[in-house]
Length: 91
Image (cartoon, rainbow, N blue to C red; front, top):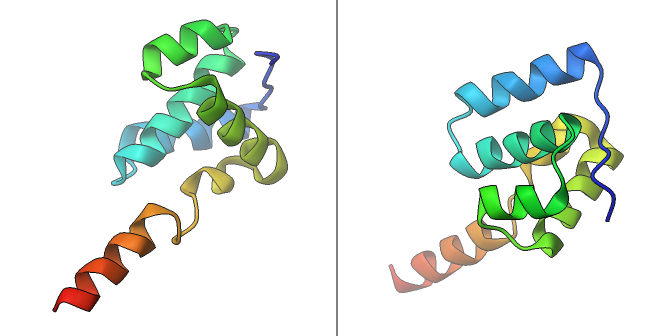
């Protein structure tokens, strides 16, 4: 697990905007994670700073590398959709 994540100035600006202003705290954490790695933080520093597993960080780094900052928005379907289904079935 290599901590080298690179992002150009425009991508960094986009990530900073997501980190500072996105309404979803999970998206803000993911952007922060990528920014830290781009700044040279080690995986162990990021796992400690995020209280996340290296597996979680690896998943989001891979998504970022494949789809850029937009990939950090996640997909409606993981936990959000299952919660909506549970709530909807009880109403």
